[in-house]
Length: 497
Image 1 (cartoon, rainbow, N blue to C red):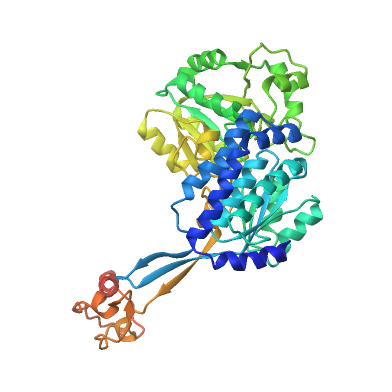
Image 2: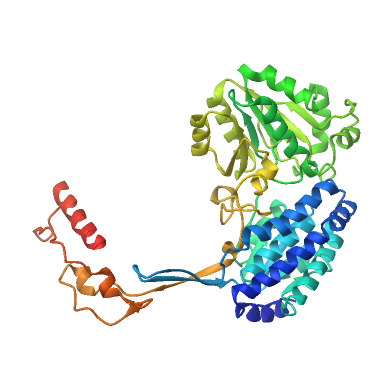
């Protein structure tokens, strides 16, 4: 499969951007047409989420992604600067190995295929075993549309016998150009240790801070919209509410009014046994389930119409499941004295799990928002918007994406929302603009032949030489502060010239 993909990628690499765009457009339209049946199939197979919400996810992975990248140039000449004598050329990475999670299976397959082909890459997909059938069906829709639009055979492949051995063979094959890993922490670590370039995504655990100037009803609405969307299966969704003591009663009243149920201490203790497994990882039985289903699982009686289960917490730690990522409608609730303490609590939650990913803040105070932006170890700070939908670019102007980089602090190669521009190498073409004599501080040599876009570089760059300060320093002597300043001025004058 990889060999076929590599051969197909050679053909893709010769296609102009317009032809690649035609293939992507056809894929996006075909996926959008099948958005509902594929969403239903995903829920039936995995048991995760809400099919109506997965329809929107499929549209995000197809139509919305396509519209965001439609005008983008990813291959060929990206930029020319005649004045500087520089040109940048987009070069495909080759074959993309794409790991697809069970939480967002069909939409992620669509999205990763679009951004790969847009950048002239072939793709081989490795489905999560728990979502194999719906992913294979999605790839079938994609492949048929791509073929009709002129894509070469083998440009899109999919493992159909899902085993750890198959995935490992894919990740470690030397003909893989880059790995796109979206899934559990173990899978992401395997991608980074494969020996191939990789872009991985760590877990999310974003707190939502409600500051005293926030529109509290709207803030709670945003949090609940996010936490109940597809039953919380997007990793950018909120995992905790952090608020201030001076508005605690108002926030709690609004949480209850909008369908939140505060668990008693005994209920919190009982539910905590279902959130994590013995090995400290999230229990897959709770993923994407409604609040009522989770309560029934734990033997809890909750009011009819409860949307989110909320547990008051004061501690953060690996053994406290409420301070960890919970891909379901369960939230921790922390109360702090002032925004500075709330800031510290948010950092502690993120350092416990989810560093580099996403958090939200609900506030009308630009100074507080700025302080959070400066200090939080996240790649996305979302302001007055639902975390799940804002992080993936649905309710914000971030790039629409279902793979969200976590940066170095989160163990990721990038902090970007991944787009086709993350799946290319940039070849830089640089014309000579200085001679050795220039670097040594002597008069420049006579202009030589050479052009950048038809303009001689000599004409575009040469100015009358500025006089450099003369320095006399004994051999083996030391430089005074004044000497250092003079040297700096001399060097900067040369560089500017």
